[in-house]
Image (cartoon, rainbow, N blue to C red; front, side, top):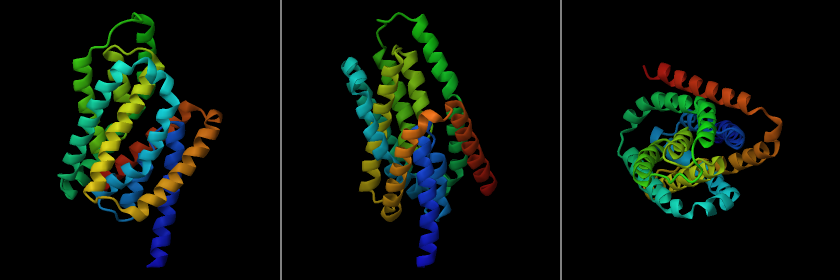
Length: 259
């Protein structure tokens, strides 16, 4: 038993460390950490919940980097936060009401969708930049459709979450938020709150495998620190391609595993 735990722990620590590096450099760390939990025998829903809790502290600390940009849009911060809270809570509750077998059959589709969303991140960023040039600076955001869209996206974040940040960026741009730093700041707030309420829900419902979760927190934090420190030496395009390949590969594996 100790040998088995050491083997599982070593594999999970490696995957979480690399996930932390990827999240710091390009995002997409869940493409490694979530399948790693499944690989060591954690049930699908508990694996998703444990992965969310393990990676959430890194999201929380990233808000501090955008505090100045958030101060520009304090009026928008409240509806965005409420929408993220509502959507993330509903998504987490629906996940916990989903059967293990049903969720496992959904995993390859969720990984495929997340990979495609991640692949679209480059075009989305360029599209936002074009809209920033084309639109008037003082265009007012459309609150009602923005909040409705955010609830839907944050439902997905509470349910699974990988790749949803790019949907939030596109939605913010469509409904009137054009400055790229404000878009990024509000995206971080929305994803952090949606995942945060999911974290609380998963903890209350006792879905966390804590001995694995704590190991992942430590190794993902170490990977995130090193990834952030050396990120400037890496090509964002190459890293994005690498993440997409990993995501598609994981999706293909689970399609073959669950025919």
